[in-house]
Every structure is written in structure tokens, then in C-alpha cells.
Length: 143
Image (cartoon, rainbow, N blue to C red; front, side):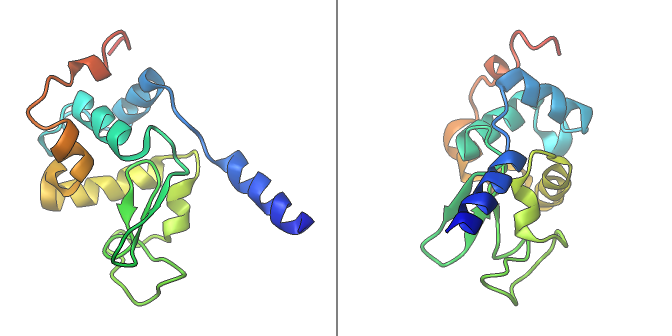
């Protein structure tokens, strides 16, 4: 039992819940502004809708797949899930790598997804951000 608690503490230490402007600046520094025709506001809105800015977010879907990390990247197509091996891994990454506070790998994978499918790949963006004024998500951030 102590080992499980210890491992949970270690995993929690690697996760981060971003503040809105902190995330906007991190995304901007990684070239997300304007990527795949998504404004920086679109990307921040998408992440708020998908994970509430939490790098440790994980969701279990009805079809057995899981969504991982700040962008909620799906294990059926984009990353390797040790629980369900043999599926696509188009981002060439282990899903667990999407759950830490360094969002570099998550951004790299999100760019692959967006390049192929645009922001419409994310239901959070389609349902909460598309055709909305998303400037509020970067307002006051100095960007």
C-alpha cells in the first residue's frame, strides 16, 4: 500500500494545472499561435474545454480508448497505451508521456493531429470554441 501511495505522489508531482495566461504563453512559445488556422485563443479554449488546463487529465471512453493529457489525445490513434497495445500510434509516443508538466510532447502530437484534421478533431473545440469569440482566453496575458 505504501508503494502505491508513493507512486501516486510521484505521478502527481509531474502533473501541472496551468493558469490561463501561463498556458497561453507556453503555447505561444511552442508555435501554436495560428497553427492549423487556430488562433492562440482557440488553442487555450480547446484545452480549457478538454482538460481544464490539467496535464494529468485522463478520460476513459465507452469504446475502451482513453484520452490523455492537456489536449486529451486519444489512445486509439495517436499514442501507445500499455493497457491496450496494438492500436495506432501516429504520434510515436507512449500515452503516459502526455501526462506530465512538460507539454512539449503533447504540443508536438497536437500539431500532428491538427495538421491532418484541424481543430475539428477535438469535440471540446467544436462544442465550446468554434465560431465563438475566443479572444477572452488570451485577454490580459500580454500576447
